Length: 83
Image (cartoon, rainbow, N blue to C red; front, side, top):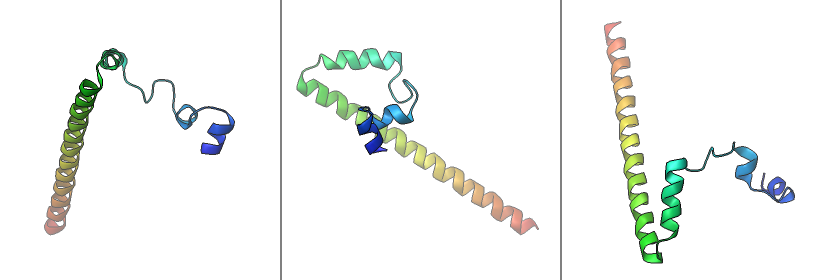
């Protein structure tokens, strides 16, 4: 894939994804444009906040997935006992 992208002088994202499939939506684009005007320290802080929010979201999803899997196992065990 990398060799193809280099030969076509493009990115692998361009080869694999539709336009705007991986980019931010319009509202986020405006916010990122504003962040570009920040000084280095402010940009670093904004990125740290975003990283923290992303980690929080990922952790919440992992917990929910784990709870869902546990509930499915419990349901399957209960069904086996009733048979």
